[in-house]
Amino acid sequence: MANAVLIVLMGLVVSGAIIFSVVVSRRRQPLPPPPLDYRPMDTVEPPTEPRVIPSEITQGRLTIINGPKRGSHYDIDGREVSIGRNRSNQIMLDDPYVSRVAAGVYRDRDQFVIYDKGSSQGLLVNKEDITTSSAVLADGSVIQMGETLLQFNIVKIPVPAR
Image 1 (cartoon, rainbow, N blue to C red):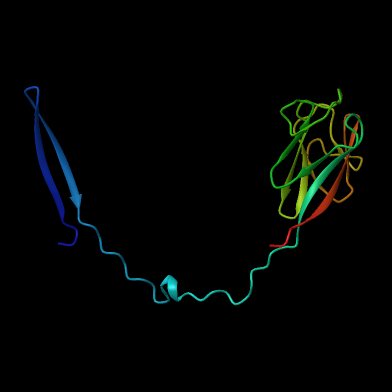
Image 2 (image 1 turned 120 degrees about the vertical axis):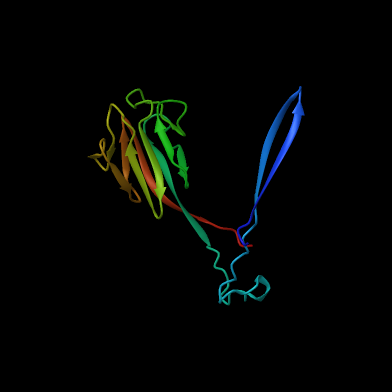
């Protein structure tokens, strides 16, 4: 009788009508036995090697080298960064020849990728047109959108010791 089912019929009188509800209860199955290599948490041994804490982190940086806002720089961490003329972009360029939403830059593991978001003026990386594709940015890559030039650099930021 391991899978016994209990059915209870209950009635309730509401405004002269009888309302019935059925409650079905199924007996719980017993838990399977633990695996043969199971050890309770208090018997787990701590790791023998110390945890390595990096001394620095790597992130990307875009610097405007020609055009309005020359000298401004923008750090790129793990999130995608949108570039264009519209105020909704994380990097807003004051260049009338740049589309409202021109490009996106994101980190993919150890590399940074730029792609065109449908700009009308096109997107050049190191003088190569990537309007219909994407490109991996190397340290020192030059990006042209409209009349604005941006330079991509990889920046190493030291992590304070704990």
